Length: 426
Image 1 (cartoon, rainbow, N blue to C red):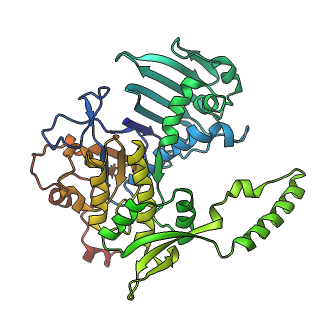
Image 2: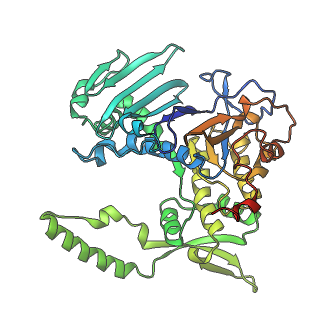
């Protein structure tokens, strides 16, 4: 369960910005809140939506979450020993290239709050820390400054041995999980449970390969039918070019093995996802099902199907899902229906959470959305992203938040520059 996420010096985010899931004391709808003793008010919100003008930094917030997740999961296994750390500091201030990027998160595992974070330069992880709060008191599990480590009494295991195995450009959390550290692996597992969608366009083959790994089910088909896509079912079938691809992989394997002077196994790398494709069924005029390849479906249907697979996975497992541009290629009612799945106890009994960016102001009028679930991004005078919640602004229960946002009452909207003036500029 996520309590908060913070980031600094990453893409358009220069100064430390923080997104919180902790419920406020507002007297808004309480039905969808998730009980959490570790949260300040004893509850967290199930979903957060982030609004802002184009290029204000909404997507960069999602990319920051994905970057942190990728570094935790793969810095030990996929990083090159002398490859440095692939980061993207704030470019509009030259001084930021010499400052570390920071990623910081609070979450709950088995009712206990954990606080984890790290700082990184271009070449190495400069700092890393992990604390837990077993009785509301902070307990240090480990702290790292460069290649120097300190371990707390609560962290039992081969701590120093794993520290010696951790490269300067690898996270200790990543190395500990790879070496079977039981206590740290539970924290690593939280990051592994997180899923995200940052791509707006989903080509048919990409969607089919993803759905081959995580197959749709009847709930997703029902959802697509309820919003009028005409989809009534699906089927898997062997890719027509499977045999040709098999031969191509064998040929490429031979070439690469010869070049590397060691055996290569492209099949193991690629997997079996390319062997099958997903087709969606539509009811034909004669009452028979007609199956269409995903390339023949609309962009909205393809993306929604990929979204739904991860939405229902999060709901089934009680995990975190982040989606950039929730409304991309989707009708308002479809986006709001996704939001309702997380904000309704009946469909979200395990406390799954959603964070999504959107431009769809109609969602601000959704009855399932509390005011403390609405956040904004905007650029300051120096081009840096600022993230802030609606609760920082005085509002009243029952206010038309959508109308107020379009009128500029809360900021985070494009500058008021009449279109007629644009043609006169040279």
